[in-house]
Amino acid sequence: MDKVCMHFSKITDAITGEITCGDCGVVLCEKIIDFGPENITQTNDDYQNNARTGQKISLKMADMGLSTIIQAQNKDSSGKSLSGQNKRSFYRLRIWDRNSRADITKQSYIKAFTFLDGIRSKLGLPDHVVEKSAYLFRKVEQKKLLTGRSNQSVLCAVVYMACRITITPRTLNDIADVAGIKKKVIQRTYRLLSANLDDVKSASFSPEEFVSRISSEAGISEKTKRDARKILEHSQKKGITSGKHPMSMAAAAVYLAIQDNHEKVSQTRLAQISGISAVTIRNRVRELQIRKRNQE
Picture (cartoon, helix red, strand yellow):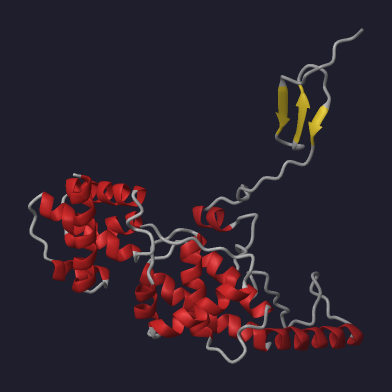
């Protein structure tokens, strides 16, 4: 009985784009797709621009990068003039294409995603958070939840929701400050969206995610930052951080680590950095100290 070839030796033909077995000659794969640029030009500029792929598809574009442009030229690819019937057909197509771009839904997308670009640049949001925000905004529009509400407030709510889903530490205060919208409005819209978007589950932030942000702005040492993380890790195991604002717990842990390492950063300074009142930080510090004494 003949042995079955396992095709261990593979040969790639760069001209035909086929992968064949070097032992038995069987064609294993056809039509390999080359995603690189064309190599038929000579200058460097043409080489960089002559790519095989087109514009990137993105949800934060109103047309998702799939726009069509029908030029006002009544000529075919060979340069010959079109017949009268074809001219009338292309004229109607241009009218339909222009009207589709002026659709109310698409206009709302354009305004909302322009506003999203501003929030992105001010908060330094990564691409995956922006894409998730655009996806959630489109989902809100499909469920007819934009009626009677401001696009800006809804967009701020979905940005905060996307940050929680992707575990990107951005607070409501951060979003409200850069957007110029009251925090209560964003909170109310967020609760509405959370109740209506059943398949969207956003996790709560962990206090440890805000330690690096507070520490870098306060200018404390790396040892103090590590100590603050240890305090929060121990507090989470004991359930001290449950139900508490993550930013307030992070500020309290940083303050305790600053005291242990004898660095000079006041509670007022930490309150300014974190956006949490000094009274709240003192209360959280007191809770952490009480639990620490009880364990000792």
